[in-house]
Amino acid sequence: MISLLKKFIKIKIKFIKPRNAEVLIYDRQSLPNAELLFNKSTFEILDTRYESLNIYVLIKTILKYGITNIKKNYKRTFFELVSPKIIYTSIDNTPAFFLLKQIYNKVQYIADQGSMRDNAFYNSSLELLKKKIILECDYIFALGENDVERFKKVINIKKSNILIAGQTKNNSINIKTTTKKIKYITYISSKFDIRGDMEYKILKNLIKFCKENSFKLYYLDRQDDRSKKTLYEKFEKKDIAHIKFLDLKEKYTFLSKSKIIVFAHSTLGYECLSRNLKCMSLNHQEYFHGLKRKYKNEGPFWIKTNNYINFKNKINKILNYSDKQWKRISNKFSSEILYYDNNNVLKKKVIKKILS
Image (tube, rainbow, N blue to C red; front, top):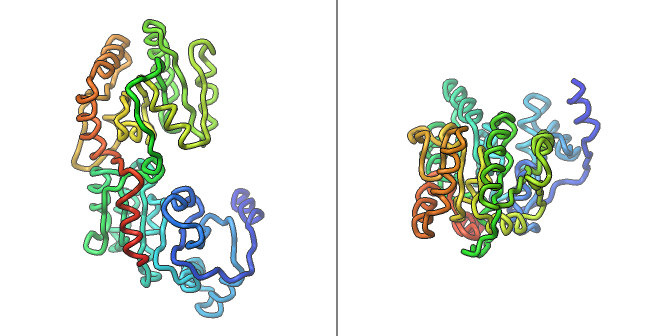
């Protein structure tokens, strides 16, 4: 109740009619991706997390539809007033977006997968299907083959186009990879649901490996996670350097110079794989990558172990792959997991086709 009250206090009240626009961004958190795909002058934004409330739209909604189903009808009215050609979101893991076609069908809907997802969306979508509630979307931009398979299980594929198109931010940055790598290893901080003791053991092994091989170790923090602060603070500053970037290009440039990138659960780790950067995953086989495809405990770029000897052998094996061998490995698995489409060519082609 208190958290809900705080949301209402922070709501920005608007009185002006939303402008007519070719593109409507559904959920303000989709903006970082939307700004890479659309001209800012072409879009309007619908806040879905109580950031703002448009009184003009609210009054129009009540006059036209009454107060029954007011939340749904507020969206419908907003859509009618903006009259877009495209409604876009990168918050692809909410079933609500895939029900919008039933509210307003005079538009093309695009769901752009923002990152690797757990089972929450898939399971909640299955529950809706059991109730005969149909989910659909004109275009879904999936990260890779595994997510296409998963979407096909819960989305009406007769009315939806599910395309392998990669991650928008990753696709938008073109960094020339160099064979002249600097002698450092980067560990990418994991998602909040990975156990701290697991990461602690990984970092202990990495520190030992770096000492034995005269490597510098960097801990690349997550921008949105404060809970990991004490993890890297458990180690001596001389053994591990904490680093955090706000600029996308700077981050990818730094990673591109690493000898190897190590991670347990990270979309960014798979983005590096898609860029043909040498990577090692310590949690790959446990992640739910797809419904058909299950990965063994050990593979070309991943291993499941706390044993230092096996850990060290896997890193050395990856480091010793030739560029040709590694490119073959990374291309194969990135098409399954997270594809790289330089400059978002496919997404922009679909968007241009709709808008023209």
